[in-house]
Image 1 (tube, rainbow, N blue to C red):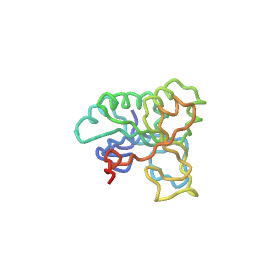
Image 2: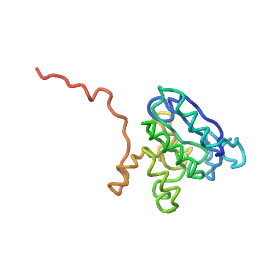
Image 3: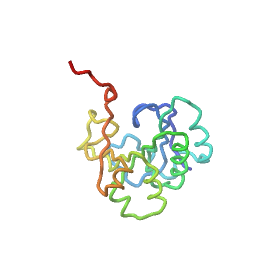
Length: 175
């Protein structure tokens, strides 16, 4: 698998403490991209996907895997292996893509669809400088969506992820 880098304790690429894999190679070349060094498909370094999967389990505090880039769908088969390993460990999987959900589905590629189905939350769409905001959680521009994939596929329409209320499990007694 060709990667740009990994971060073993990310707190900005999805909720909780996450193992983030930044894939190498991106066809989108979004102006203003915060990872332009990932665009060249021949850049970065080649790492056996099994080695990455083994590194994922090193920290017992990790709650999830984030696949970012570059473009994870450009290496969908390898990313799928990592996503399955993350789910086997009880983690959530977030995948960032410059493609929209609709484009991924329309492509009809079996590896792309398998990676999509193994993704819990898809952050979709290209980064758009004119839509950039530092107030957004887990995304760079307003056009990007945080999509709950399983619910979306079941309902046939995008279901957006919202941050769970940490106090929701507590009830306030009525007087």
